[in-house]
Image 1 (spheres, rainbow, N blue to C red):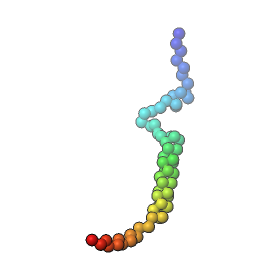
Image 2 (image 1 turned 30 degrees about the vertical axis):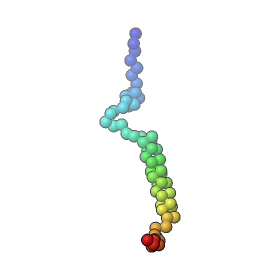
Image 3 (image 1 turned 120 degrees about the vertical axis):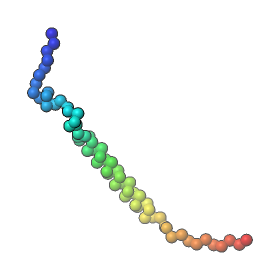
Image 4 (image 1 turned 90 degrees about the horizontal axis):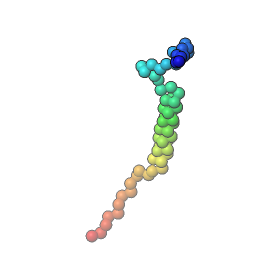
Length: 63
């Protein structure tokens, strides 16, 4: 004998493929990517600030 359980809450929990959203996990992943991008740009800016871009002229070599 099989019984079908019917409850109004079960119909609201049914997922509609057209209305599925990323939810909290999607937000967390997006936030982590944003923070990681900010951190890597900050580190790169700090590293490039230490580089001396002025090139000294080479001494002429005798032949």
